[in-house]
Image (cartoon, rainbow, N blue to C red; front, side, top):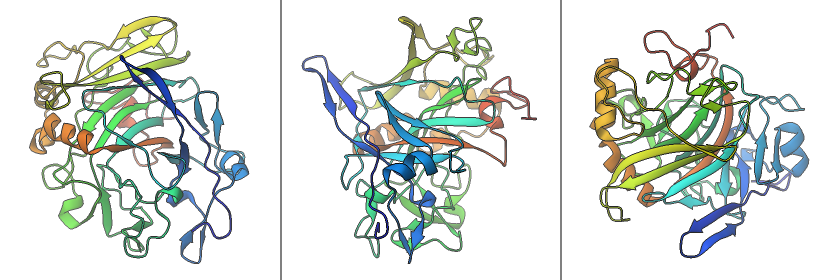
Length: 355
């Protein structure tokens, strides 16, 4: 891998903070997913600094990175992973912790999804597995709860026929544009990255992962004026914001089971609690719990594959094992992102289907 072009991953640091010691800066970098990379003689090539910015629209900015949907070179969308700056993905263990980030979605129109989430990828990107000599440095090893079949390399082999998918736990911290947002745990019945085939890649109780997940989208939960463009909304998406997600345990210790996923925002110095549910049949509350998830599934008349896959307890076990940070900016030609920002029976946002 990287025989034609030397890899030059854009740097991106994160802060690790504790009450006792304050905050320390941990250096890292983002690396482009292998699906986007040029392939030479069966190997993913590196991307230099100019390639990241001009070809793929990815560049380091103060305090983070910027992803452009359409780059100067004509590339559309991207997906990157946080590494330690060398040969491994940075692994986050978030149970009994909180995760915060700053984001600006003012330019993300209906149908787009600027996402920040965690998946249970292999820390080394599967390096040394069969014929995989590239690994994390070159964006190898992606998996998520949708069991995607378009991954070019799986377990060191080319996925030329698309018969296999790559499944794993997924914790969506942020899927959003300027009209709608959601955060969603997707538990699975397997551990780590799993190469699926046939029914294991499927939906509902048949597949190994909960593809629907248990989402909290304020609009879909009956709060249509919580998140959107302008001063009429509690969270104004025309301005930057800080998004905070807490992973609370049953006993407030690292050893307890995951019991609640709580969200709040900070914007222009204001603390903003997440919106309360306002859907008949779903108890009033503004966080994700197993009780909320089951009530939501009943209210929306959908199968509760979240509970079938172990709910928050198994999600917490994945958080203990450690997950990799993913940043992506994409559109969905098949559904126009209706599940995120529009829809009919239980609309998720105010966008229209005609984009």
